[in-house]
Length: 234
Image 1 (cartoon, rainbow, N blue to C red):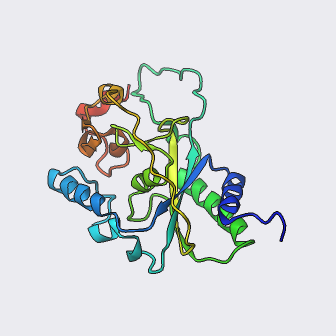
Image 2 (image 1 turned 60 degrees about the horizontal axis):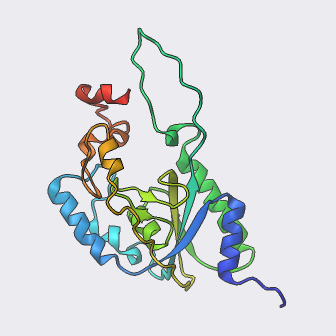
Image 3 (image 1 turned 90 degrees about the vertical axis):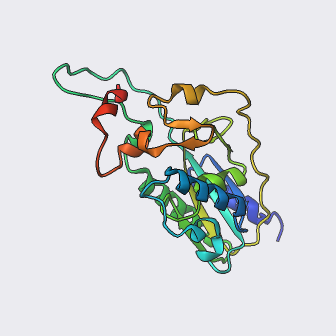
């Protein structure tokens, strides 16, 4: 058939229709080097209760899908425009929260967009898949880096050349044998602005975050934010 789109072109079209800013393909092989990072994080006490206990499922895609051939990673921007300075309430404590918390739960938004993308793609090709949005054991940021979406910043977030770190991620395990993209090149160089900007000193060293000091984690923890850190919310 003339003008027939390649699978990669179909994925690109469906991803754009779904509203994703970027997407890429990561290889589905075992993330052996990431296993060593996980072990070190546990030894240093830098893991969170949200992380899966089974380490083997965190670096082995075949534990989740036996016939997985490729992993499609998608990214959506949450870099919404800053609103006017919020009103102050002298008699009540207030604080600042990340833009990612504004509006609907991003997990639901991303799931809807991924399902839309997969529905569109399924109209053209037949394939099997499993998808996750911050719910599976695989390291999404590591996959995003390997898919070329961005590089690991010293703040442990993925940095895209145009969006910075204002992104949310999702990934799709599939049995489609797709050629992987090149991993993103780290462009941080000697810059350490994120380390200096962290209000609690949670970035203890490049690429290493102490979750017990991280405001983003503490706002989700059952025990709440320790009193000694509450003033850091501004």
